[in-house]
Amino acid sequence: MSKIIAITNQKGGVGKTTTSVNLGASLASLGKRVLLVDIDPQGNTTSGIGVNKADVVNCIYDVLINDVHPKDAIVDTNVPNLKILPATIQLAGAEIELVPTISREVRLKKSLQLVKHLFDYILIDCPPSLGLLTINSLTAADSVIIPIQCEYYALEGLSQLLNTVRLVQKHLNTGLQIEGVLLTMFDARTNLGIQVIEEVKKYFQTKVYQTIIPRNVRLSEAPSHGQSIVTYDPRSKGAEVYLELAKEVISV
Ligand SMILES: Nc1ncnc2c1ncn2[C@@H]1O[C@H](COP(=O)(O)OP(=O)(O)OP(=O)(O)O)[C@@H](O)[C@H]1O
Ligand SMILES: [Mg+2]
Image 1 (tube, protein in one colour):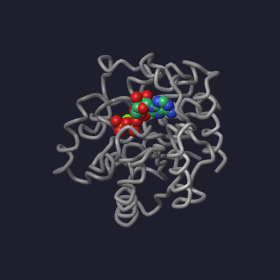
Image 2 (image 1 turned 90 degrees about the vertical axis):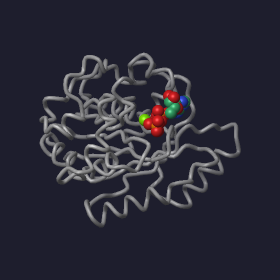
Image 3 (image 1 turned 60 degrees about the vertical axis):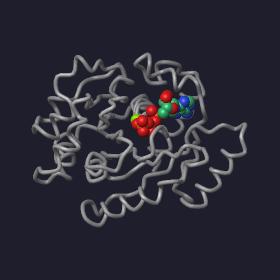
């Protein structure tokens, strides 16, 4: 059975893209057929997995706005079992161009329905906003993973995100669930990180993944080499924890 998971948090720089790429590659290394959907105009997942944006013929923009079939936009990555529907800067216009279009919130859902059967997991890397691209992602998804950075302002804005999830559940996608909450960039040397973990666990309880992603320099280096951690440094702590997370995701 295939599952569409949106990796979302409107807060910037919390580890959405790092999680999309490395969870995706880890699931693929466990034999799952995975599609990454880059719906962030920054296109960090696209470049981070080694796709040269200049070579992209059709991107997610063409799928959302020009009715291009997703099969004509999906490309292979350097990881077996892992494909990507890439984003380029063209997508920056989509947020505004979608506003007057018919069924603007369900465009991604309709497109992904056409290819869902080809994959075990579809991971959508959301932009840091709650605009129409994120609404499309939440409408298309079966569930959401919310990465939360282990730092002081971590919980700020979370009620707004959860409110958006509730609104989408009410009006657009009644089946939408919270897949899990992922603590990222944990630094064991600070008390603050431990406090954030306690607070997030108090709030989300069993929804919080056992796997906590620590700060790991190899994870931050990998994208500049166009690689996931699975191929960049499979022996690193970063590779180990994302593999653990993949096993947790599969186990539910
Ligand atoms: N566990 C980690 N250890 C070290 N660096 C990390 C880790 N996770 C993410 N980073 C780095 O932190 C920065 C932000 O991470 P990332 O791009 O994944 O966040 P994001 O939520 O996708 O950001 P945006 O909101 O801009 O899309 C990046 O430079 C990334 O390499
Ligand atoms: Mg990102």
